[in-house]
Length: 563
Image (cartoon, rainbow, N blue to C red):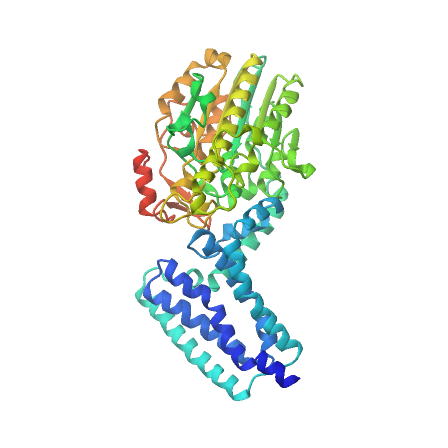
């Protein structure tokens, strides 16, 4: 029986097969990443040598593979899924944090459309893991001489890898094994992700003493209502009011009391970074560790004497967004009941809140907007573009995906139009700002990229819609604000830098943290340099962010500066 098992689950084959299995992501990354030749050589030889050495150390090779090298197996499987999803890049810090903060609903929606990746993982890694477990449990060991040959092979591969690394540091500018050798780079990213998670857990302590020292400059007796509406995954290219050739925003397009900004870029393609920048004084210039000591615009309005509310159609994920929501006097997360809700349901919450009769009111609405799965974001009877049913998110189904995606924007159009009508009916000095956190790839070019939050952003993920609305009474009292918005609308804008400052300026709230040069309702507005907050929370220009030539072509096509 033992001999039969040894023939079927040969440990002599396993000790060679397992290191080669683990090196598959390295080989794939050598093709997808723009590494130097020395980096590519190092990325294969050094890890392969280490895997061979580790596999040869103990006679219980099944235990070595299934237990000791399990981390490499796990990272390898994760990396393969990422390459299926985005076609490039290592497992980024933001990707690890996204996994930690994504709710079960979002994850299940995504996995359903990653069938090919899941099948590949099952075929490549699950049988190998079972193989190792059987060898370990049954204590089936390889031939000692063959294990010694593996050890010698691992030794020389490691030596060759070390030499190529040394050559890389000598001859290649910027060469860094912690960024270019898998899984060393991912282990480093995991460490940083853990540190950020711990810092986030301690946020309440590190931000406790923060204050905007905010005060209102507007008359105390004036009834004022200000609202921020944060969109989700909505990209500017599909907004009719911004030049799209399909009627996705028919209601907003008819209004004369809005200003739509066509040249707005987000400084992040991830919700857990973009929304904190939108709701605080921070941007890519000053994000880094400052996020752990900063409170949101909700606190600024509270300090200025406003009653505040935060209504969300997102799920809680114990991140900064949750913390900012809890700063409000009234906080409601629709998904707390565990059900799917449409953004239109936020309207009822707004109506009830406005009836509380407070003279000064500030609201933040966080929508679920255009987040995949698109068809789940609007009721079936609200479908405008057909067909919109998509069996699988694949390039061949792009037309249906676009139809469904466009329907989500029609829903956002209805929401914003209704909110504007409700605020206008209050006969108050009121204003509303809408902006999406980031955009989305929908198989737009030869890269066939899909979704957002990829380690390397694209034009479609950072070009976002932004709209300002002001009530009749507001425009009568502060005509210069509406005029300034109109004069600034065709300028380059960073949503990450401007939303906070624009809303503070609109509401006449003074603070040392507010900057009029970033306010879209100020004649002092200055166009920003185009920057991006990268995986290491560093401010970089768009070329260093990883945008490709096709992305810059799209920017230039829309008259958007890339500098």
